[in-house]
Image 1 (cartoon, one colour):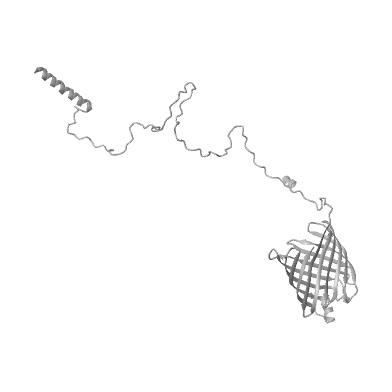
Image 2: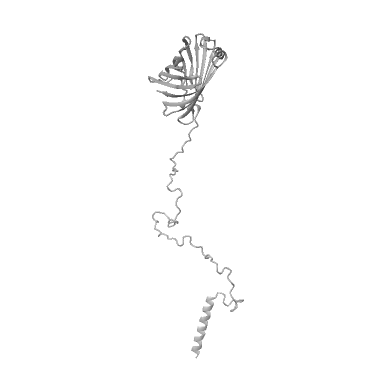
Length: 338
């Protein structure tokens, strides 16, 4: 009986010790067996662990190799998926100390421009000996109006090289099946610039009702700014003593093949020449407007309008002879060259 009492006491003490081991506050004052534990304010929240999480937790870390013999430590980022290099594939300039920076291009100086663009003297270059020629029938036309029918021509040609040329020009009219006034110029031309020539020679005039007239001729011809073809000729000798003839024309490209050509000619005479119906001063002005279509650059038919008028003493001489002082006509013709 005594032994049974000792055994029950031992079991009771063992049970009480187990309870004390589980509850650290067991036996402390202020805690009753029925007191409810305080509600955890963070209950239900996904709180991080009190212990700092391993930043590499979950990474497949490679097995550390023993580099003790090499004095190297294990790579702390081994096994991490590293972001791609944003400059991968770019041809980056090396940062080696042996690479030297490129020097900027120096600003060109006046001497550099002078060396690159030297002033060229006219005809300083040697020209290969060559011979060329060009014959242009600038107008070959006919008309028929109240004053009668007629035909007219204007030829401009040259033979030679780029510097020295022989110029042959001719113009005239044919009225009522008879040859009227016509002229021929034979001139030597020398180029003084890429756009201008000086010419000198002789001019011969033939008239149906008056003697022939031959005079000295010299002048300047070429292309002015804005591509006006200009000619200024002086004729010396004969009853007129001196005559200045000025001509200007221009090609207006309406299309690549349709071209409008205005033309103006004026003549100023120093003295009267009554046998040929020419008076001193502004003698006459001719203005023409021709529209041509170039089937090829060498062949172009055209239609046009021409107006002629006499002025000053020349107009008086025409009135005294019972002739009109102006004439207008529609013309049709062809322009070609070879």
